[in-house]
Image (cartoon, rainbow, N blue to C red):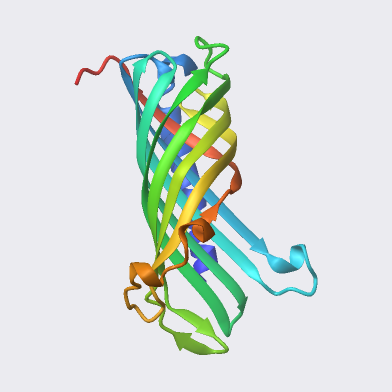
Length: 233
């Protein structure tokens, strides 16, 4: 089953990152945020919720999987400018005859300030805050409804006009952290292609203000940091 394969994949990635980061057992937490340095990082978020846990009358299974690699350049200590792609897959299953899927990819950028209480420590808390911006394209995948395979050729544009990222990291070691984040923002979504795969003309789309959303995202995950200090461009 795809659920099991994705779960095993996530666990494998987690173990690989944890083992590899342990080989970089040198330096301090503060090295990840040093001026004129570059940090490579990555987030993996996995969410699976069998519906019956929350509602005995529901058979829905929700699966969401996100991968966010990225790079941050620090023009000064504790001030980072970041950029990275985003990959997202979702699968909502009511039963064997009703399955709905989607896939999206995007590009994100922003900057943040870091509060590092103990920069010379090998463990500890770090707080990050700053604005971010992004754009992503969501592709509809072929679904199954009432046992019938339905082709979904839709494309949706999703623009994050601005979001304020607030993240609390706890570094278990110098290059590996667990994090919790709160991310309020302002987004705009509009359909570019219908489910039949036909382009939707601008004058046929919903009014701009109807596509605006004010989401607040809560995330829990882990990050791998690979720091390179004193890199000149």
